[in-house]
Amino acid sequence: MVIPEPHPDEISLYIHVPFCRKKCGYCHFFVLPNKPEYHRLLLKGIHLEWQKQRELLKGKTLTSIYFGGGTPYLFGAENTRIFLETIFSVLSFDKNIEITLEANPYEMEKKSLKDFRDAGINRLSLGVQSLEDSLLKILTREHTREEAINSINEAKEVGFDDISIDLMYEIPGQTLKLWENTLNSAISLPITHLSLYNLTFEPHTSFYKRKDQLIKLLPAENESLAMIQSAVDHFNNASLKRYEISAFAREGKYSRHNTGYWLGRSFLGFGPSAYSYYRGKRYRNVANLNQYMDKLEAGLSPVDFEEELPQEQKLREHLAIRLRLIQGVHLPTFERLFTFLPTELKLTLHRLEEQGFLKQEEERIFLSTQGILLYDSIAVELI
Ligand code: SF4
Image 1: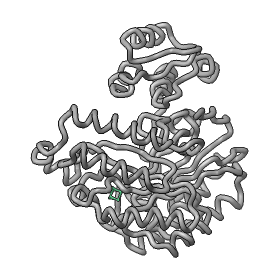
Image 2: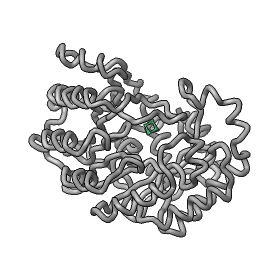
Image 3: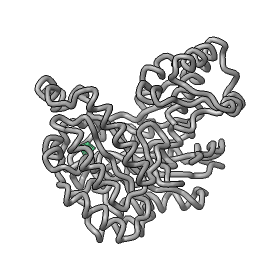
């Protein structure tokens, strides 16, 4: 699977919908209770933001739109349709545009799914996490294995051909056997894409407070490694190819939106706490719905953080992020797009190759099997 270089005029949109019925114990995202008055505020806010940002989109072609969160499914098909119509009334878009909605299995209903499809959503990303009831309980998820399986089948029945699921490993109490039960069930479902995550203990979560107790229940390091290898083997046998360190897809079904992040495509974020990346600058909206609204209603920018890295640091970061893709980095193309690699960086790449973490074939560098496992340390060396 070869992922093409984004055209400089391509752009993506991300809409952060922060509502959830309940906060999961491990979640560190900006999340609010699911209240109708918040929905009204958000809809107004993203429209005000749209008015401010649309100038930046002139002459651009929209490649993907991603409704993430939170649980954007809770925002409702009608609000989603209204915002998409606003966008499409003024912007040109790629005929293969990918429009993804994140959802959780327990709240999905067939009728709403159909409404979302009619509103323009053509890809679903479902927070399944596990297909083992005991582990879903530990994760404080609200759904069961059966509900997850039914939701995926129902999504397929109403016409979603692109369905991605998230699965989590390194859960307290998880064994290789339980993981393989989940893998076997997952590959029998009508999914086209899969993302893997390991559980992390982030500050300000209830899991973080119980860290000492939960850590004792984590799988041992060698078992975690066996879990990753088993996942790669299971997915490979089911024609779900690894195209990024944590992402697997059927042929041609890679996430257009996420590959934009890895390849440095510009994107604009809407909603509280949403990030944007535009003309080499990264910025983020304030992570507070009232402050976000106050700023927009006063005609001000809701951005509370922005940074633009110095040229060399930017180059290093792009290189490290692109290496997450299994296809690696074609060096002449990379140097044409950015600038020549500094000698010191070339020497680091050469050393990592000699140490067996990187490989090089026909001017393309990519991570070796060992390099994939140790990606975080390699990225630190490159950046
Ligand atoms: S559903 Fe997702 S976004 Fe919402 S609290 Fe759970 S992990 Fe966080």
